[in-house]
Length: 211
Image (tube, rainbow, N blue to C red; front, side, top):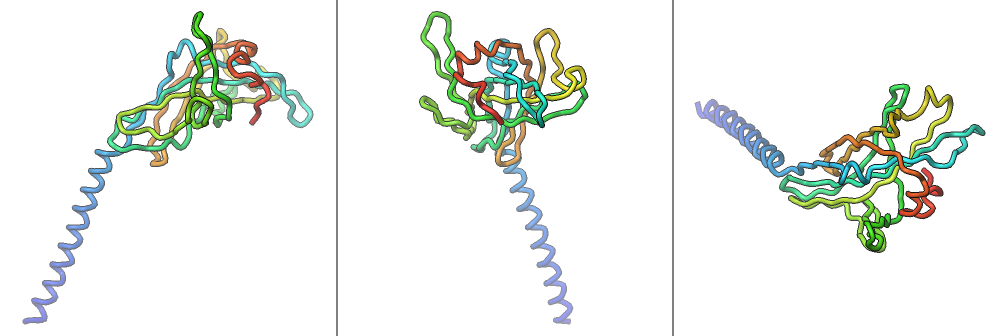
């Protein structure tokens, strides 16, 4: 009789331990969902700062290539209750063929842009420490970071079959941001064409930067 009671007690205690583990797991999951970072990304002044431009021709296996630069100015906000560091901010483009290509940001100096008749204003670059800005990628709860990012896309072959989808000197892309906790945010970007000479005024020798 005592043995039966002991076995039942062990079973009951095991069930209680399992139930307690499930409850604790649910509480932790609820707290994570409640406190997790909630990222959003968006272009700053979308009709002003988002540009694409033609770069000097490149070479691939002895054949000339067409190269384009993409310069964006974006903000990343965190509406969650936990601070988080940004892992990457990649640009995705759709080609004439229907392929989707992924571009990683390249290192550039802090752009300087003249605002009206005022002196040049220096802007931050995401993830790059410069003379003026630290280039932090940590987004605190309820806060945001912003900065420029630069990408290069290169194509070879028939331009009617391989290359960007360009209409009225504009093309489109998508920025995808991911945190170290795997939180993601994305937004569409519409790029307006700008002359390389204008970009060189903001970022000297940008045409020498390569992948």
